[in-house]
Length: 515
RNA sequence: GGCCCCGUCGUCUAGUGGCCUAGGACACGGCCCUUUCACGGCCGCGACACGGGUUCGAAUCCCGUCGGGGUCACCA
Image (cartoon, rainbow, N blue to C red):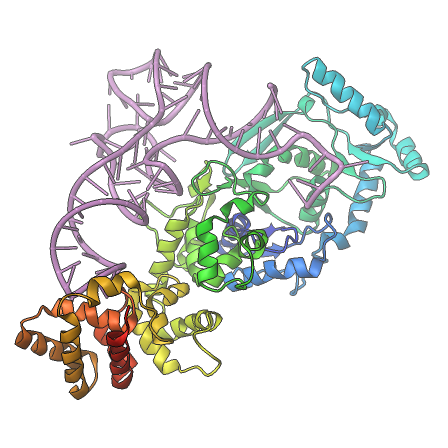
């Protein structure tokens, strides 16, 4: 039997990182067993502009490299892959259950059930819905539904224990007497999630249902649907939910705005990820660039492999020490045995570290490609791109870059005039005698040839020896004068990239500036 | 509230009765390297929720308590 797994997002307009983790586990499992990973779109509900709300999700998966064997764009033998186009399947299935006596039309009004519910609650009893018409014979049920369509409920059997043998949670048992008859279809024939998902999983031949733990409570009901249909349920594996950073609550789509902290907003502004004229409120409401979405990390320049590695390790481990591993290693070793059964909190700091590990070993050409859009967005680079210069800049930055957006912190001055940090100027440049010293050293620089890092360094050494001034102090002043800030790549590398003329010009400006 | 699930450092985790005075990683603190910042190296801080059992021996098994989460829709 070929393994078939699926991920079934609803088109929300963005790819949520909780979903990515679940999708990744599905994908890894399918890949490991040489099976298929299916993407199905659960778009039966909210009538938003679907194409637009779906594309960001597809883009996200594509960027991450989570490829789907069947689904939107690629098709497949079990289509359509949009629930909104599978209505007939659900209607047929409902009819089948009606005919076999496993479901019934429920003519009880909302008011009636509400009354019953309140009654039960007032007696501190749990309300378990059992429709009045559940005893209708199958023939009568079909006939009366045909005459007068209404909601269809599944007939939950009495006095049974439903056992779910979950691959991660173990054996989970639930008494059917605690399960109300669930609505499986509305009067107009449209199916509800708990029903549609079973029909689709069945029709698509899904063998392993890997999904978030929040679905565990629904599973017995779904098992009952499989049973009513006369088929064996697939294998279930419920993975623990992902919690919000520093929290023990689910990383919720509904509470996304809480991640839009002042720091995050400032960061987005810094990297020019949002239009400058946007207000904080507008940024907050923009779900596309929320830290709970993939797009956020993409625009900040996290490598997709880093996200995959991080999320693969969130709730799953290879062994007692491995943190960084290739996708192939994950595929080869993924299994439910090593999925943790308690929730895991998303830790952005660790993700950031992982990102750094990946960027560190990325080929220079990739880094150049990654840094260009960041620089362009920040207005530091036009369309005429000097790859050679950027290559030098990136090389000079070295391991300082953990994400591409870091290039703005370390190398902006290569692409514009220095913005002098008053504190740096005060501490390093306006030291007693330093202005004088620097002016003299500028004259030395005139004659340095070749104007490369090694030669520059040697000339500073000679100069500082002769002048009896600490090389470090001059170095610091030189850095502030030419870059405006206290941090950055090695100063001689910076000067070499800037070139002699520009270096001298900047020193001149810095020395004249009243700052 | 009913039902279900979970409970090892702040966080991610290792641990399936003796290898555990609980190992690794992120974060944090210190030191070293360094003409800045990062990188790297070393050190430190820091956890078995609690209480009972079972056992020669328990983080590991059982029971209870407490705590946390999820779910109880004609949403997905």
